[in-house]
Length: 72
Image (cartoon, rainbow, N blue to C red):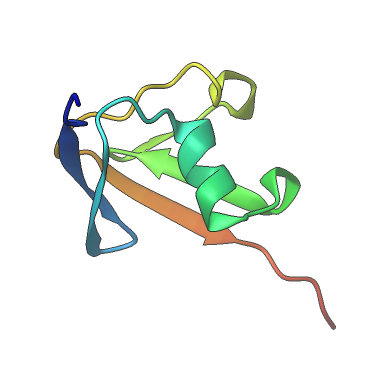
């Protein structure tokens, strides 16, 4: 059996181990976050939501996800 390589990322300030094959889309799906209500930044650069399925995560990436909540 082949061992799946893991990498470490920092997600909202916390270290998280993920598969080296993960793309940003996979992470958001795992976190069950609605794409329309989040803003995402990788290594201090805002992510174009149209590219989420193609962005591969790398060891040491610093990811910030901000979830917007409506109210009044």
